[in-house]
Amino acid sequence: MNMQFKKEILLAGFAIVLAACGGTTSSSESSSAASSSAAPTFNESNNIVLYTRDTTSGTRDGFMGGIGFSAAAKDDNLLTEGFLIADNTAILTAMGGSDKYGIGYVSLSSVNNTVKALTFSGIEASEDTVLDNSYGLKRPFNWMLRAEGDFPTDDVENIANAFVAFMTTIEGEDTIAGAGAVALSTTTRWDDIKSQYPVCEQDNSAVTVRFGGSDSIEKVAKAVTASFRPRCGNFIAEHEHTGSGDAWKRTNGAQKDEAVGKDVGFASRNFTDAEKLDAQGAALPVDQYGQLAWDAIVAIVHLDNPLNNVNADILKRMYEKASANPIRTWAQALTAEAAL
Image 1 (cartoon, rainbow, N blue to C red):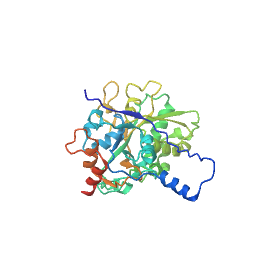
Image 2 (cartoon, rainbow, N blue to C red; image 1 turned 120 degrees about the horizontal axis):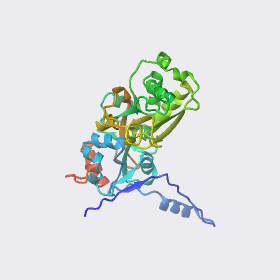
Image 3 (cartoon, one colour; image 1 turned 90 degrees about the horizontal axis):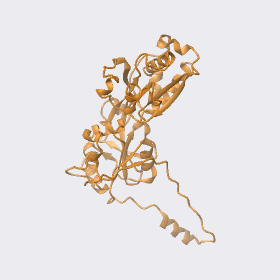
Image 4 (tube, one colour; image 1 turned 90 degrees about the vertical axis):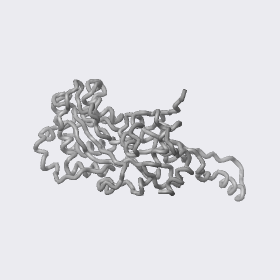
């Protein structure tokens, strides 16, 4: 029986504690100790440690589709043995410190200076390269609302509708861009449309609006709600981001009326045909969901990793268990990069 080795990991970070011994040491002894404790150089013969998101993740859906391996978006059995499943934070933490020989992928908005972001077919991920379509690994950020009349109160429904409208304004899109996503183009200001949402003129400090869905959009969603709250009566924004699959499930699907139900859901991928239906199988109105931004998916490695550039073929050969020409070591990866 072919056993698939998988691990669910949540890495919070790693600390190195150095304890000094008593007594005196000579400068030559200190130099020798420092040399022996120096970090080893990167060993290209080491196996590649693959990190991936779980099968409900919009980031995984976009990544696998972007490298021509869509079948693996929902099927762990197709992935190379020994892969690790982790969320955005865990992947960033691993690549940033603990796993010199790992490779993973995250949303552009999550990339920081603790990791090396690889170029894709020679193109760096940025707002400009996403908008001009020169960067190949991109996906939409989408929103979804509960059905009309299915919100906890009229105030919650009206605030949710105003929130969606705010995301399409210059102020909303500036906030989206500031949080690391690629905003859509608009010429509308909030002042031009706020009169259409009188709920924002009242005190909403006792009203809670529940946001959830994709954790890749969490940073963006929190930034937009923080910007919008003072413009709409200081409502309470409650965020719980657990994955793109919950965007529909918790606003219009089986969990919408449970304690985990949400008023606004986010998905970092396109909604499936099934997710464009309500729990009874009727089509959702087209104004009940839409796009708020674009995002790039970025392959990341440790800062000490000499790899700089990949393409869809290299990444697929890493992740595909049944590849006819697999890449399993960093030496193989660097050889493939040199051939691009």
